[in-house]
Image (tube, rainbow, N blue to C red):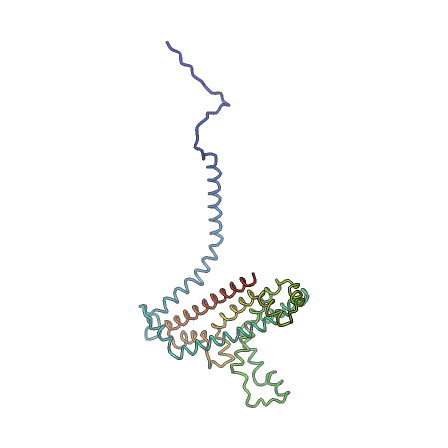
Length: 318
């Protein structure tokens, strides 16, 4: 009879089982993947309120307006569905073209004026001590804690007959009998300047504050005068803030509708006034949606141009 020897391992012995070459790294890699998945899920969960807000308040309304701009209208100006290019074809009418041209012109004028004054004010603030800078910035912000409509009505009292402007002109010997400051185009320009000047000051101030003061001293040592220092040194270095200020001024000016009505008498309308008129007075929702989409395209084009200019400015500085 043959005896077979049997080996029984001890309790502390382990069996050496062959494993694939990548087995030692499978565990840590799996844990890393699970950790990455949890972080992604957590990030999406945190972004969910912002995503819902953007979709509900921006993307979906824009899609609805875009669809309505191609819809047909009934006798009362409501949306009846269908698809037509007639709403956009009507925009070539001289009346609509005049409003678009006037809006672009007023936005350009307001942007240039705000940039010039904003640059001067920003340069003055930057040249002050830090404690004084905070005070000056606060003085610029405080008036804008008041409602926009209330501040616009205040200009009616300032520029109207019996207001301080007429009193100063009368004291200087100016004949104010035939002078009409409001409603007028000058009052509209003043109102737009007052409304958007802070949005031009703060980006320019932020970019100028980042400039090393020794740069200006070096330019003066190299023979640059006051104008050359600004044109060849300070303006290029602060071009990012200037472009941002131009965009923040030009784009919202296109959609303003309160200032032209209250200070200009509604004689010359901006695109914002035209949209309100089409929706409320003419009761033509498809046409109002078409003009709204044109305004959106103009704003996007302005942003693209501003981005290209800012990129080109950064390359020159670099």
